[in-house]
Image 1: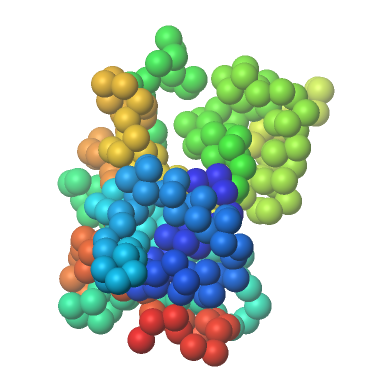
Image 2: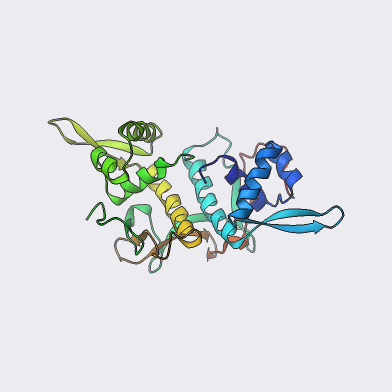
Length: 138
Length: 138
């Protein structure tokens, strides 16, 4: 993810901008960069190509399940930026809504037992894939 | 955030690795890069310096509220990586726990009205800070 255009492309696809020319126009990105980023996102299984016309053969871009779950992370990052790095006084650039009911959606940390929890109550502990001989802190 | 070491430094501070020499040793990062990244994170209000000894004068690094809320985003990114880009078969590198009760914490999208919702039920809509004359999709 350490690359500027990738989250913006994913956000566009999530908005519903699915076609190469539409993303190109909306983001003002170069053709070469967009082609490269889209190919990488397809290779990584974040986006998939879905044909929408045969003559000429053309495909649009859709989120995979993997990509859809990454969007949840991007919504969290977007909310953090809106709160802590506001761009002027205009307010949020976009808001996430729960489509069936129309209410706001927020990225939160949820405890399996207690429901929503503040970050200050959360600690990281080593998991089974921890490779270091010792955890940095007891 | 478009930079490799920054999330790893934040994760270390969140683990409880607060001191320059400990972060240096744990991450195997160069002194110059660590100094630069820590200075930037302090300037951005994500970390703050807290003195822990007078002789010699030394400070350690703690998360601000802004940084603490960014950790919630990083936990979401970490979970996404563990699920979709697993590093071998060893399982998760680290797990987030709700300290008071000891149960797992997960990053989720939560509707103000309905509680947890799947990403597929979420749509982005223009907010008050939207600058484009038209939203890309109706």
